[in-house]
Structures are given as C-alpha cells and as structure tokens.
Image 1: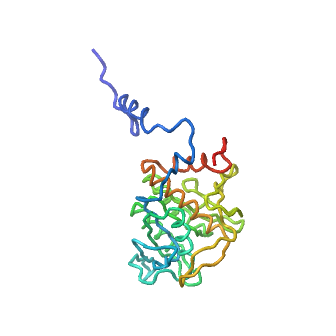
Image 2 (image 1 turned 135 degrees about the horizontal axis):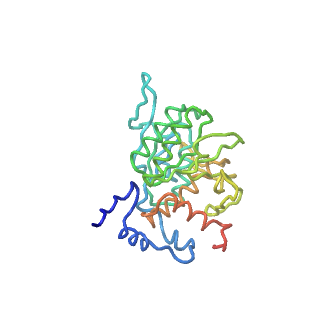
Image 3 (image 1 turned 30 degrees about the horizontal axis):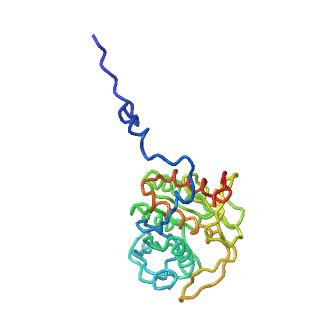
Length: 275
C-alpha cells in the first residue's frame, strides 16, 4: 500500500512551481545602466515623500497628485488632506530633485514636519504607515529619529513595506549618531558625496550606509518658487529615490531586494564599471 504524500510545509512550493520560478524574469548576463534604466522617465512609478510637505505650484516640482498632513489631535494621530503645502522648504527640495531625475513619476506628499522642522515620533510613524498602506512604489524619507522608543514600530513598518514591494529610501543622519529608519537593512540607506553629477551614485562596501549620492552644495527648489544651495544627506536621498523610480517604472515586477541589487550593480564603482 502506497503511503499518502505528506503535505508541503508552509511557505513551500511544489515541483511544477519550482520549474516556473526557474524560468521567471531572467536578467541579462551583464547588468548595465542601459538595461536597468534605459529611457525610463519614471512614468507609472508612484513616489511618496514623507517630509515637510510640497509646494505644488513650484516650477521645479509641478503636479502633486496627493497631499496629506499627519497631526496629533486630542491624543489621537490624525491623517487628513493637506491644504498648506510645504511649511519649511525641505520637502519641496526633495520633490524637485526627484522630479529632475524621474520627471514623469507620480508624486505624493505626507507632511510630518511643522514649521522650524519640528516633528514627533508618533507623527513620523503614522506618516510612514499611511504611505505604506497606499502601496507607493518608492517612499522617500529624508529624515529620521534618534529616539529608540520608536525603533521597533519603524522597524516593523520598514519590513511591512519590504514585503509588499514598497521601496523605502532613507537618509543617514548628518551627524555620527544612531537614528532610524535608515539603519534598517530592509531600507535603502543614503549619505552624501560632493560630485556634481546627479546620476553619480556609489555603493558603500562598509554599511550601514549603503549608497552615496550627490548631496553637497546642491541647487534645490525651496518655498516661494525659488531655488537655493544646500548640503546634507537629506538631498542625497532623493537622488537615489529618483533612480529607484526610474528602475521601478521600467521593471515594475522587481522586488525591493532586486532594486537594491540593481543599484549596486549599476553604481559608478561597480565591477566591471559601466558608464
């Protein structure tokens, strides 16, 4: 008498599924920027900026498809439509950089900072949660918190984004201190270099910072329809976000892990180098 076959354990696939996986989405023998980015303009990619808001009528930004503000009211965190836009310029700067690199991506704003760049942990956590729940392809976080009591919640959210295929791109702190969420391996962490090329990015062989992008003396959009020069990891991060939008628009099936791998393989210091 033949023994009945045992059921597969959870998170296992059968023989037929293995064959399907084996032939799925082959990558080229050599990955190049031309394959990764091609002529992508970001069309079809949905990008969310969790920051100080976006000045939607700024000539360097253009259309903002969705804008919400997160606040604490009567001890409850509330998400509602944002009618003010950017209250201190930082989010507009990030939006302008992303728009320069991926001009046809869809932009959304989640305002978690107030005037004077003031924010709170609960608002930051809820802002990221909202962005993840909306299923954005790429989420730009040019901000972080040093307060460890929010570490677990942010870590759980970063993992949730990772498993639902949302790419979180987060800036390293400008000072040598521990802050979050950029230190989590499920996000793409970014710091600055001083070169002028907006598409010059480098992989770091010694994490936790994983990539370096343009972030020194950058001409950025600011509130009031103006531009100014500014420096910081905050402005390196949207350069990588823009590249992620180009990749996701061209290869919408890629997972966050695969997008991160592509960034590494197409970095200026990748081997063999590719222009």
